[in-house]
Amino acid sequence: MALTPRLDIKQSQSLVLTPQLQQAIKMLQLSSAELVEFVAEEIAQNPLLEYDEKSDSDDRRGANNEEQSERSGDNEAGNSQDQKVKASDDFLNEKSPLSGDNDTPLDTDYAELYDDNSFSDNIGAIPSQNLGLNGSNMITGGAGNFDFTENSTEQKQSGPISLKSHLEEQLIFLQAEPYEKVIIQYLIGLMDEAGYINEDTSLIAQRCGCDEEDIDRIFKIAQTLEPLGVFARSLGECLKIQQIQADRYDPAMATFLDNLEMLGERKFSELRRLCKVSKEDFLDMVEEIKTLNPKPGLEYGEDIVYTVIPDVYVKKTPKGQWFVELNSESLPKVLMNNRYLNEVGSQTTKKEDREYIDDCVAKANWLVRALDQRARTILKVSSELVRLQRKFLDDGIQYLAPINLKTIAEAIEMHESTVSRVTANKYISTPRGIFEMKFFFTNAIGSLDSDNQYSSKSIKYKIKQLIDDEDPKKILSDDKIVEIIRAEGIDIARRTVAKYRESLEIPSSIIRRRMKNPVL
Image (cartoon, rainbow, N blue to C red; front, side):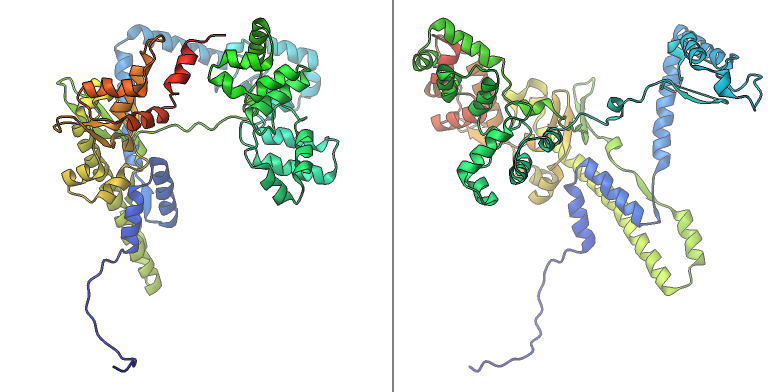
């Protein structure tokens, strides 16, 4: 058969994702904060889209009505509030050297009228609780603005200084060669928030084009910076730096810091014998170590705390039924401005302008429908989750049911990928706390009779509860925990118990015995 080019007509079917369909799929997995940013970008690009201010005003009106009903139910509180308002009004209406309603001529030289002494006397005569009814120490009058707060350099700082900025300020005055400062600057960039360098020394030397001996020498120079303990490559080195500065680093302390893992495992007797010290000296060394700072870098800066905004609220009705509702405050409300569309459409004559308006109309309609579909899908998945996890909501985590994406997808007649996107970055608020929706999807562990299944999270909770309640004189081994759990009809292996225990960061039975029964 000869190989020659030719043209053929072939008919086939394929699934094509349009840009709008791709955008709708992307919207499903956005968190509430990311969705707000996405909608804001769409509104900025589309002149026909706008926020639904009517819904916000209705919410505010409802809140005001509730406040008015509460105030009407308590006359005494209302009267006292009126008295406070009246007192504030009286203060504003008083004739004061600082108010604009006095008879002082407009051409008065205020520098002569208010000297330094009289100005300070006037400040002292004004009640402190009345300074600035707008919440600041500022009084605004016809004569000008007088700021009673001293704007010192410390007060102008926007926030606490970060660790890296603090070290870079000291680096300027450090007595070192220029290339050494460059390497120290590189080490500052490698430092974590606790002040440690987790990069391998040989790799740092390779990147900087130096020998490891030079890098170790530069580390010692950098470790003289404050706070003491930064630029350490291990906990022992961090504590060693602080002990050297305190002139408390002797051979016994060196042995102690070189074997810190024995202290964590409660091998007190073995560690004391290695240090070759008496029991009293060993206890003093332990107390001295407790006074040191294992994470000196955390003294500077602040960790950013993100507030979790639930997407769904789950509440229990007086009749004992669970009620699921969307958090309307986390959902952006948009609509298409038909009035502006009619106004612009009637004045548009060019073909390009007409095509642009039609495109904006299509995008606006799509966004409104996509937001509504997203909300409905989240509500549908959440309702099914609550239905399957009703036992957990009623009785606790030990009754968490083992479910997967397929279970939810078959119940609501959607694809598993859609359920996965819906539950990503979404939070659900329950009387037992706020959980990520992914929390409710767990692996199943079978029972000995093959009739029931148990959630892996509930088994972890059971293991933790057994270890927390164990007798210090009778520490439970993994085999003993398996025996106890299997006695309840749960089919579990020893390696599974060990894996769950390690995931909970619970040490082995040998270490727990030393921790709960310390012997010197």
